[in-house]
Amino acid sequence: MDKQEIKELIEQFDKSSLTKFKLKKSDFELSFAKEVNTVQNELIQSDPQTAQLKHLVQEVKSDSNSNLTEVRAPMVGTFYASAEEDGTPFVKIGDKIEAGQIVCIIEAMKMMNEIPAPVGGTVVSIEAENGELMGFDSLLMTLDTEDVS
Image (cartoon, rainbow, N blue to C red; front, side, top):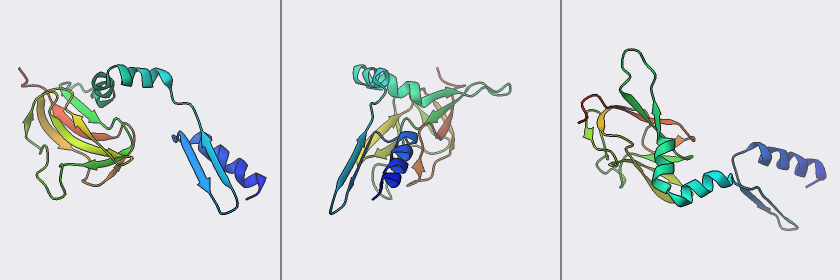
């Protein structure tokens, strides 16, 4: 591997969302690391539920139906609708759910992360497919909070 290839790797690493990268070959080893946003990490470490919910909720601005809430992916990972392969989904369209109820799982780095509903309501749409790779802040589902008491 020449200097130009290493420079290109460094540039790609800097542009990516990766925080660590390691390349091993028979004759050398190369590794990169960059600092993670410490403010976000402190928030997540101090109150992971609050931090996660802040990333999950985004109000839909719509004149016709302002009571919709989008549930978004808090991380990059694989979407799973149920806890087991071919298992019963956590939620289906039309289900009435409560705030904090688990609505799906996002697998990231071999860790299964349960995603809770940020608000109570009715599931209006499920945008993600089982096994689909989701980007950070990807739309997972939409909830209607109109009839929540």
